Image (cartoon, rainbow, N blue to C red; front, side, top):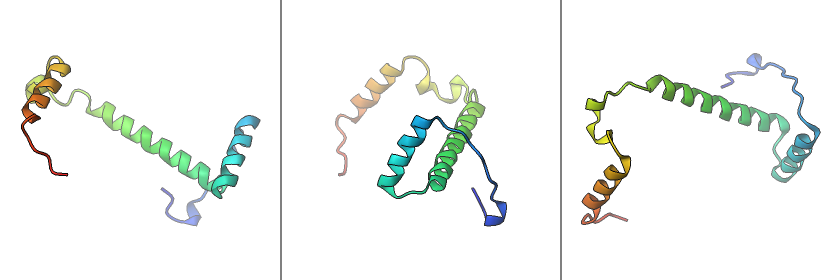
Length: 92
């Protein structure tokens, strides 16, 4: 994320005309600036990319013996957990 105005960079982008028209219509309704909208959209995509990288990096960290309940058919596991929970009273 941006720490100060000194770190701001100008980015020139090109978008299809139809997309710009749709964006303008949305921004008129919301009152958000194009700059703020693009910053939030880019920030969301960067966050999603970081999460995906972390998920990929974690792949294979657990061995089957580390999580024996996860081995095999997940539907069986779900049925077993639901059966165990049938008699439980949940706070609301």
